[in-house]
Image (cartoon, rainbow, N blue to C red; front, top):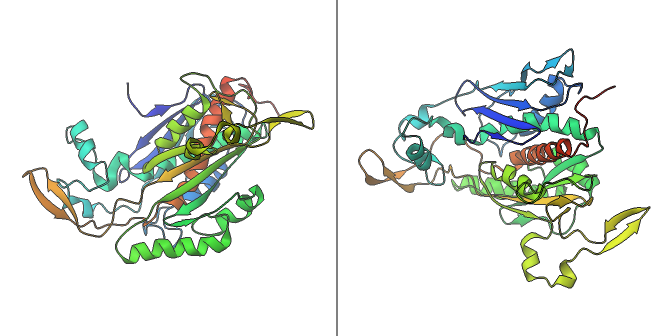
Amino acid sequence: MNGNSIGKSLVLTCFGESHGACIGVILDGCPAGLPLSESDVQVELDKRRPGFSDISTSRKEEDKVEIMSGVYRGYTTGAPICMIVRNRDVDSSPYESIMFKPRPGHADYTARVKYGGYNDPRGGGRFSGRITAAYVMAGAVAKKLLSLIGVEVLAHTVQVGRVKVEGEVSYDDVRRNVYANPVRCAVPELAERMIEEVLSAAREGDSVGGVVEGIALNVPVGLGEPVFDSLDADIAKMLFNIPAVKGVEFGAGFKMASMRGSEANDQFAVRNGRVITLTNNAGGVVGGISNGMPIKVRVAFKPTPSISRRQRTVNLETMSEEEIQIAGRHDPCIVPRAVPVVEACLAFVIADHALRAGKIPRVIKA
C-alpha cells in the first residue's frame, strides 16, 4: 500500500514535488455532467498562491491550472480528472550545501531513512507545503459538487502567534473579510495585529504558527460511516495530511475536558419543523455522523520550521554534530496560505461522504 491516495467514493491521488516539474492531482469518482472549467479551479488556487503579500514567501508561482483529462466540452465525463500546476520559479541551490544536514522541524531525516536517500530533498520535495496545491484543485471540484446540495465551506484564521480571535465570528464576516487581508482573518482590527506578529518574528529570523477554523454549513444529517470511516475521523485524517498540522479539534474540542456533562451536552429543540441543537459543542458530528448543525473544526499549525537563525543538526555523512543556517524563500507564517487548504480538505471529505450516502447523483443532469 502507498500513501498517495485518500477517499472511497471520491478518490484523491496527488503527485509531484516542490521543485519537480509540476504538482498534480487525479480525482477519480467525480460524477459525470458537472460543469467544470479551469477558471473554476483557478479561483481557488489563487487563494493559496505564493508571493501574494509581504508576509508570504518571495517564491512567485503563477499556479496556472491545466486540466489534462476528465472534462469534455465544459462537463465532467465520469473519467478520472487530472489537473496540474507547473513549477516555474524554482531555485534549488540553497539545498545543495545542506544535502546531508537535516533541517530541524522538517522531514529531511525521516524521509532519507525511509526512502534510503533516494527521496527528492529540494525544497522539501514531497514533504513541502507546495503539494497542497493538489488538495486545493481537488477541493475546487468538491465545492462545486457540494453546491448542488446547498453545502457551503468556509475557513478563516483565528490565531497567529499570540494574537487570537476571541468569541464567535459571524459567517457573513467570514465571507466578507477573509480574503480582503493577507492573514485571512475575519476580524479586520485583529488582522493588523496578526500581520505585525508575523513581521516581528521575521525580523528576528524566526517564525510563528497559528490556528485555522474550518466551517461547513447546511451539511445533511447522516453523513459518516462508523466506526472506522466516521465523518470526523476522516476529516481529521485529511487535515493531518496538510504539512505542519499538529492538532485538530471539533466544536468545543479540548475545552470539553474541563466541562461537566450538563455544560457539554448539546440539547435538542425544533425550529421551523427541523431538529436542531441549542449549542454546538460537538461541532456538527456526533457518533461519527453529521447531525445537521454546522461542522466546526479548528486546525493548529506549527511555526514554519525554515528559519534563518542558527540551529543544531548533524552531518549524516560524517555523523558529527554541526550547525545549520537555512537559506531560501520561506513563509514566516504558513497559516494565511493554509486557509484555502483547510477549506479544500473539509470540502473534499464531505463530498466523498455525500457521494457515499447517495446525496449527490452519479450523473448530474441539467
